[in-house]
Length: 299
Image 1 (tube, rainbow, N blue to C red):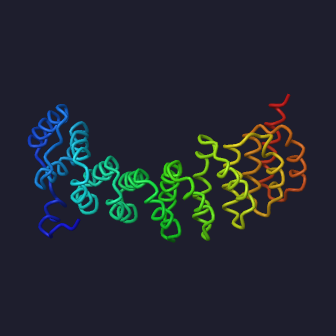
Image 2 (cartoon, helix red, strand yellow):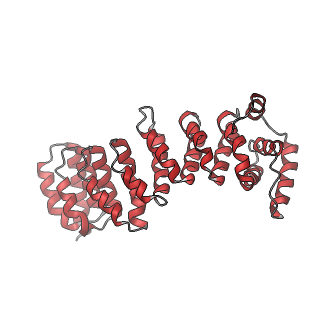
Image 3 (spheres, rainbow, N blue to C red):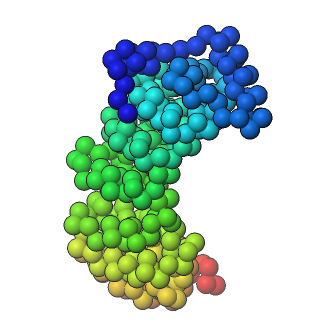
């Protein structure tokens, strides 16, 4: 996987003229149309990677498809370009092309790009490529969440990636729900929604219900929110009404919103009692809105 210093330098600033890119794209298009795999020697791959920086999207797509067709042999140069190329367009396209290949060999480089690159598109494409790699990337993604320098933007990307991975590795995601780190439990619980809604996963549903009483208020807040998106009112309204007296105001607020989203008409009485005793003005406003909307829908 290592490149020599001279190789590294040439990859980091490699580019093609417009004419060279067009000629190469035409050659590659013909090969792909004929079902042939493009040449996989180092010089050919380097030219294709350089072509990823072309300003014409159609040509970039041709180079990406060609590199994807080559597959494993293209990974070393793509990884080097992802981490070292001066042109951000090449770094973005390299991550997207590694997504097409979906090999765990690229995982360390995708992880580095996700942590160190300053371009949001590179971060998003790197996260997408790690999600495509699947369960092998799960531990790395979860590990980022406990990094104090992890940004909200990175957290959002990780949550999306975990949702995608969860469909492939439901048991691994359930294990993450029992992590000693609250940040990991929040992300894992959030990612259970697809398993509950699309796969009707009872284990995931049971774990979500358990999370309602998690020691972390952030986990509880995420759990009651997900319940509002994933469950039927009659199954969870009694559980949610109890959470209107949770010690954390955000949990109470999210609970009221979930009851409203579920159109839990039978919860109006419980919400009214909670409104009478609620001391947090922001939470009380949300509860009052929930009551108003539920009453209007029940007329």
